[in-house]
Image 1 (cartoon, helix red, strand yellow):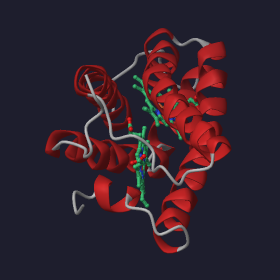
Image 2: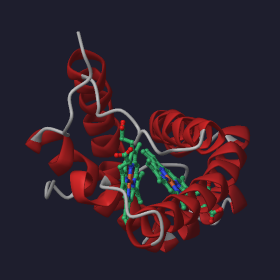
Image 3: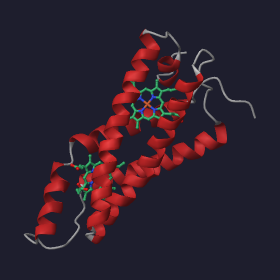
Image 4: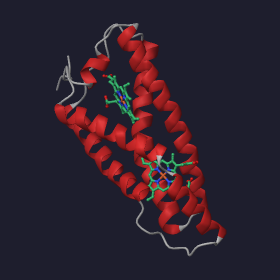
Length: 161
Ligand code: HEM
Ligand code: HEM
């Protein structure tokens, strides 16, 4: 099966919906972090109550799995032909790492939250730093592609190619 030349509507919706949910997770984790610390200090009972960060995080996992399934079934547009091999490799590695983090983080977060485990919490915190670095690189790459290299990669993820 040859690679499609565009992202489908569903792929585009999922990209932006997940991006918004990930932004929510990064911006609004203060509540769960404070509760987590109190549980670990023994200041509050060791009970994991429903929490917006936990709920949104589990929804991200489900949507990312749907997205990976569609990616395997339908495929994604090839990288621009003008892309230097080295940059193409970095793009592919970044996208792969995004998927790995977005599947792994809900599990590490859930292991910390539901079972009160310390190591998964440390992994979760480290993964969030890696995720934020990748997001920064990803946005910078999108801007450079659009304004400097003048490729259509930004256009195709907003559905305007
Ligand atoms: C892709 C989904 C998720 C993202 C992007 C995410 C992101 C984050 C971030 C940025 C922090 C703050 C880390 C720090 O300050 O060092 C955090 C903390 C936390 N998250 Fe998540 N999270 C996700 C899913 C989940 C889920 C599903 C749960 C629970 C069911 C969860 C439970 C926690 C807990 C308990 C903490 C506080 C302990 C810690 O710092 O590791 N997270 N998360
Ligand atoms: C914060 C969360 C974000 C995450 C987790 C994320 C993740 C991803 C992933 C995994 C892909 C690869 C899609 C695939 O081919 O399988 C992708 C594509 C893309 N993203 Fe994001 N993204 C985020 C935010 C953004 C933002 C804010 C922008 C724009 C400024 C952006 C611009 C793009 C572009 C242009 C592509 C298309 C690359 C191509 O066609 O080869 N993303 N994103």
